[in-house]
Image (cartoon, rainbow, N blue to C red):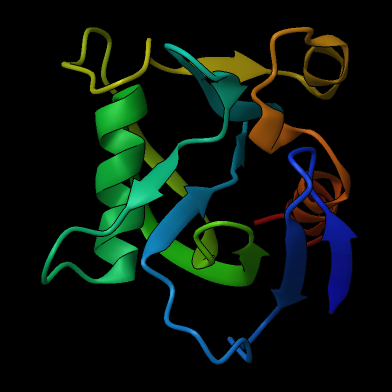
Length: 153
């Protein structure tokens, strides 16, 4: 387990593998690399980040990962693999499931929700990006990206 403080001062617990957090995840984050580039999306207020969001009532966490990715980027994914989860302890404590997946299709002009579509960045472009969301900064995101790279997911 990795313990760290996020940029907003929240205490974060990050684990890889089986969910041992004692809390059901209802939020998702999708961290994937395709053809040497990371799938990101420019959020209208927060900045550039990985796609993600909340599961809807009655929706599985895997279906939420696929839906949120499509709604925010126009990218259809399949076979989402849950490889990590983290709990953020601040005013509202929540658990987020982290997935990676395979890209099936990239829609050229999708109808988008809350974002400006898919943004594909290389490692170097991501490292130099000055408009990252606060969610993208810090130890946790480095660990998640490293897992995806190391596991060729």
